Image (cartoon, rainbow, N blue to C red; front, top):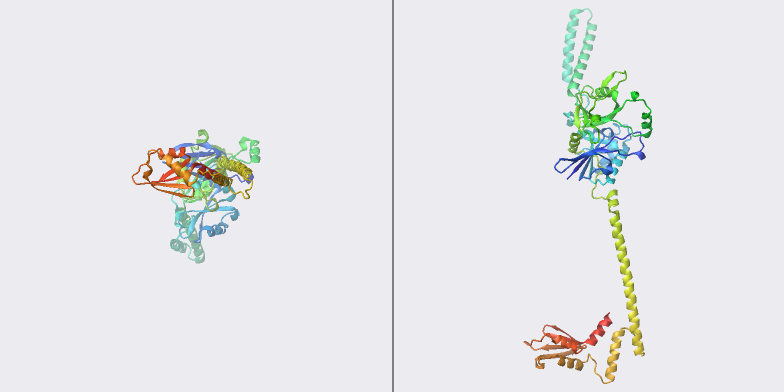
Length: 512
């Protein structure tokens, strides 16, 4: 199964929802063996189709945090999630889509991802409208090379706490040393010595706590994703009239603390100060996103320098390690954290808007052909019914014209046949379906077959049944000779059923 990995841009808060649009997106297409088939940049409608589409959601649009959840699932879990995180976010929790990490909880604590519901719906509908059926939304920070994750143990990834025993021991040692030194220097002022010892002990305990906190802090991984391009027309117009020297671009920054992640856009001249504030003394690893498909190599690898607030040149990402786009994409592909949950869950069986658009013309043609066929069948049936009625009326008129005394007309052909037979009998003629007429015809049709070979002859309902003796072989020309004498015969199990040709034609005409 082929896999398409796409990086989504961050949502511009200055652009209203009715003006949202997705620019050209960098992508990489992998085959079923994980080899790169194609990479580049294209709009959503022109992205190559694949069996699985993985979209990297911008770090600025997703907030990864931990919360303790009750042991519930399904609709109940979806209903309580806004109440769980409402104290940890600024935005109204009811307007956010909250996804739950599929990894098992540790002490009831699970990883949650918070994203604006309107932006999430816009992205999923954009991919669904472009024909991508199997879509996964993965936070971009899950693709960063995360170091040791101390928060996996379920302990909040904040500043560590010095054990009480260690702090108490350090305080006692400091008090003893301070009291001893002060007593030897100034025995006449014991109260001041005790206060000085207490202050020194508190300072030592504070320094020990800070040192232990630095040792237990979670390492921070940050990635510079490039400059932020304003998409709001008003802001873009103002930027075009701003002198180049006064313009300070903003840098898209993704930050990960273990499995927790967030993003922000910071001015380029405040990048170093922001990174220092974010790390807060914890180990920091900085990366720069490189080899982005559709981006010029010169713009991708240069290390720009912008003036800071004091006018001095401030280096940016001099220590940043390169992070190729394909490496980020492949790392995010292994993440099981899919933001498409609850109402955004991917359902491949449900036809989307693009599916209806693709099958609209064939469906309309099929429906039109069915309608035309039904109309044609009904027209033909009406035509044949009209012809049948005309034939029946003609037969009825012929019967009444020949036999005007007929009071009830049910089957004109059979009634005409009976009336003709009665006229023949009245005139002293035999009817073709009479026994004598049919027996005489059979006798004339025997040919080389001896009449002694007939075992029995039975007459019933204007049919003559002739049975030959066992061992008698009737030549194949017997049936043709019967037809020549005005009779029709059929053989079955050694018995011949013979009818008058005129009577058979009359009955078949009556049935029609």
